[in-house]
Length: 77
Image (cartoon, rainbow, N blue to C red; front, side, top):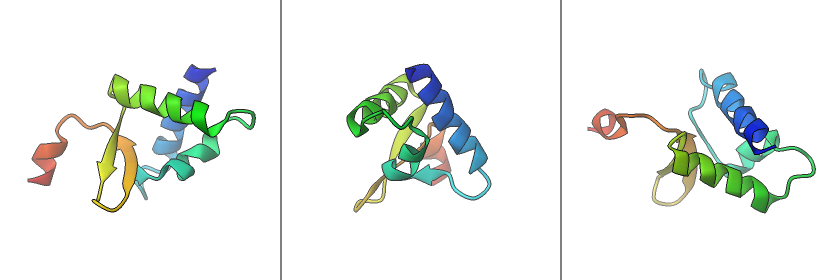
């Protein structure tokens, strides 16, 4: 089931790629199956972050999630 949720999250990012690249957890929560709790969903997102598929993006006041990019620091500078 986790693999299906992970794929659904990646598909969500792909479908929104032209307009947005960073999402709040609540935005991503829309793709979770109905029976999945928030805690279970956050564990799946954490696994994806630990795998290097996703990464956190912080503005200082809020934290968002984005697809991991190999050279994020170089793009910032």
